[in-house]
Length: 191
Image (tube, rainbow, N blue to C red; front, side, top):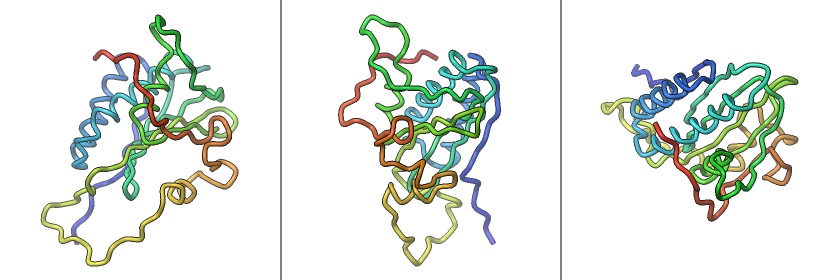
């Protein structure tokens, strides 16, 4: 029996600038391992912005967990921290040098959102569509039966930790946000 590589990766860290760069490299290496190279830039940018938010805003500490997972045809990147305050997407002043992190996440992702994590934390996440199936082993034969296809909404509803109250098709603030049709990023991340 040929074992498939894990399609889930978790990293725990303190969101300090030096560690953010390490996590960006870990995410890039993991996506290369999963043969999802076309997603590296967008996933790295998104995780950098989410970790920068933890570094700048999370209280009482900067400890967090980054999860990346491929489920069906979606890559989900999530960052869990110990601050229950829910971030909000805001319009930044054109001359501001910060405040565009969530707008950048929204611009590069298919969807994003935030959900409370118990009474003392939250999870901020984003998804990217996988362009090609995850390859387990080049010598593995493809399955002879096609998998059942679920809509994105069905996948979110059926995902662990999602229930009817937390899945709201984007009508409640902070639960599910879809990428706007035109959401240009207004700044770049160095490093």
